[in-house]
Length: 298
Image 1 (cartoon, rainbow, N blue to C red):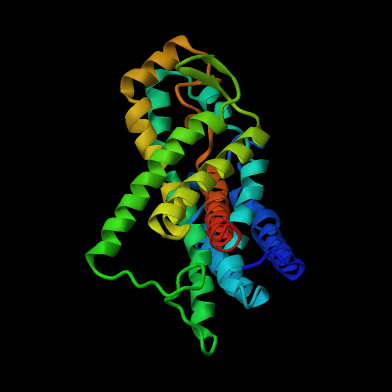
Image 2 (cartoon, rainbow, N blue to C red; image 1 turned 135 degrees about the vertical axis):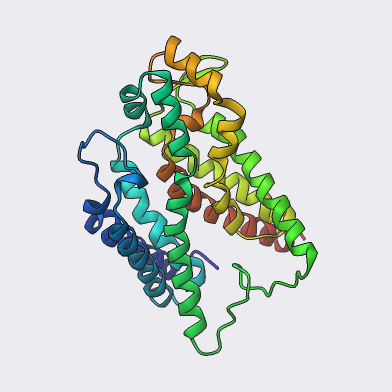
């Protein structure tokens, strides 16, 4: 897919759709009662969740036809772009840690965050499902094609092995580069402070762009698994860096703005929304790199 002016217009149209429908009009469904607090999945009611899933599916479905013939590549961007508006409007992680100061409260907070990224990934997946359904309804479509338009020839166990390797690689790369790109100020080797919003946006997108580039370049798989990794990397980070003893030590000896790793200063919605955008970006950078290497360098 060439980034021509017409494709730029398609991307702008999808971005507008996602930002308006989810980022602006649906904000009351997720807005915390205290405007300084961050957006949490636990703050959204069940009817609100069902409505968001329906809206996400509709954005993906409509986005496919708006961006046709590149609806598969562009239509998936609407939902994460809409969620990005929430991620930017949201309060920061340090607001939560300032509220939950004592060690037992902080531990409960850490556990409550562990699986929250999966909630946001479900919304992104609903948008992707809308794209796939729309693609299937179009006459002559090839719904089993890969994200760059080529048929996927992998079958059997090799598919699952490569997928598992790609997911593990994406999680490990993401955890490493989040510690570098989202770092605002390192007080010491093992302590970091709350990054600015701009640093989080750059850091998360760049991190998952690197992960998706590696997955595409060396395993020839799409952006899907790096995007899934954005919902799992926090679990690995908590196991590695933020166990009970560490939580208690930080609660008792450090200000609430200090964290043992940069990932703990990033909200789950920021991980998934920005991580998905970064995954798509990294995938297409790898596609363009392969094209350049093949055609420009001989």
